[in-house]
Length: 317
Image (tube, rainbow, N blue to C red; front, top):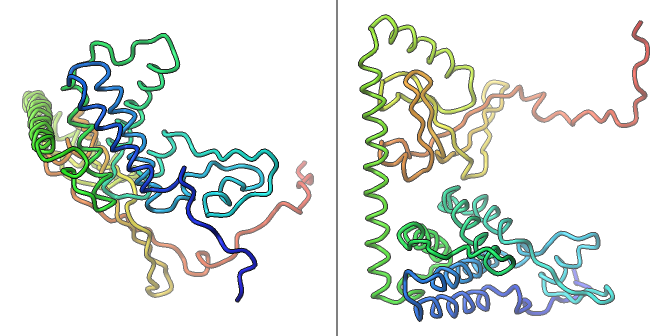
């Protein structure tokens, strides 16, 4: 079938190579500053934004297009020239960029999304308000997560961290990431041990009753059941999907399965709560799990009822 209009090249504003080059320029400006300077943090936030946009555009430039009434932004992102008068292309906000990356890249977790939103949010405060958002902020509070986030984004584009920050800085980044992981591990293990001590101090009959209640609670909640690493009671892992669901027909039923990656853990018996994949990994709760649901085949494939053309039922007494 012949196409009536052929698209041109991807616009520079949405081209992943151009966006990556800009991120590279800003990260080089970052290294011209002292690592504890507010300017260092500011340049890092600018670099992170364009690196995130490059990663999303690398999947498809259309993902950066802001939704508009005539789909002109999408049309432009696909390489066409909109006929709209005084057209000025608009792309999505950086918070939406991080949200979309979290929904597309399995390795880009909620922790990465959250850091990206906060770090670039400080940039907005720095540039568009009287607030000194980066003043006095220690590098140790954000640099490990900055490098972790950059590494995931770069890996999605098959670019090594060394190419982005240089060999020497990549070695520093690895040490910062490892050190942050060690500190996180100590914190999680400390929380787990504290809950275990409180749990062990309770009378046997109280622990037995609470464990039973926890087991009942877990069966009524949406989540993946596991044993609590602190008290051994039935607890729940909650997560987010990282793959498309698969279906199979079995004896008149549709069994749908979907891989999930843990995001947080909760035990109502001892009260232990752990949020974040990196913290869950410390206690061995970071493995993927499958969420399985069963549907009646006839209902699964039946068309949805459309009640929009029906009058309201006014026959009730």
